Length: 280
Ligand code: NAD
Image (cartoon, rainbow, N blue to C red; front, side, top):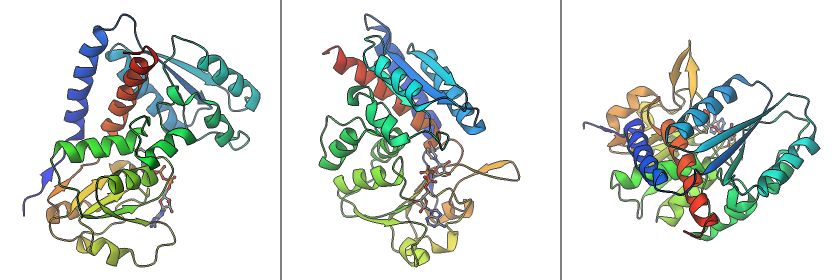
């Protein structure tokens, strides 16, 4: 079987071009605030990419960068200020935060209508309830966008989610459940992963374990969505063994699959938040 590559990079570029022309029609630029604490290398790269992508389509993105030893109150005060700033439509706190900061307390402070990462409990609850009011977490939203764009029928399919983080696995599973999949969540304590993979029609691998999901486990014709971003000898790779693509019907490459969609969806959330806040 010849598998079809799901080209997230191209789809993200197309989406960003549409967003750019839509944003050019607005009376003012949507505003996005990014809060970063410390100099974590991966976070710095992600933040740089988000700032660059936002600027390229006309979103006014502002970085608030703090040193590693910033206090909880300083960040909390900034979030409250940004909540009240009419020029800021979206806000994200780049994770992970240093251990002395209470992540949950800070994320809870973000006004749900500005929560463009979709991490606030109200948005998570809305996702769980299938409410169209939810701002959805960018990576799961991007995955669903790709599956729908490829017209992959989800109804009644066995979907296996490997990795249950709050930002990827859990919300991705919830979205697939709402689209008619029978969803199984696997995690670090799951004991029969190869067997679960063998019966899965759709696999979303988001565990951060380089090439852990083996080609020999894959059911012929499965759809493979690889969220993992890992390095082996400096080279990027996903959580699924590259050879698995040969057994798949569709697969996302790493890099160039899910990653670019995450940024595009963050920008789309910011645009949608602007529209809602300005009653458009
Ligand atoms: P995380 O580290 O918060 O959680 C990992 C999850 O995987 C946990 O539920 C854990 O139980 C599970 N897990 C760990 N080892 C496992 C194993 N051996 N078998 C089964 N399950 C296992 O994860 P995260 O923040 O969601 O990130 C996961 C991966 O996705 C990372 O590689 C990260 O870099 C990548 N990521 C990519 C994007 C993107 O845009 N492409 C976005 C977010 C995260």
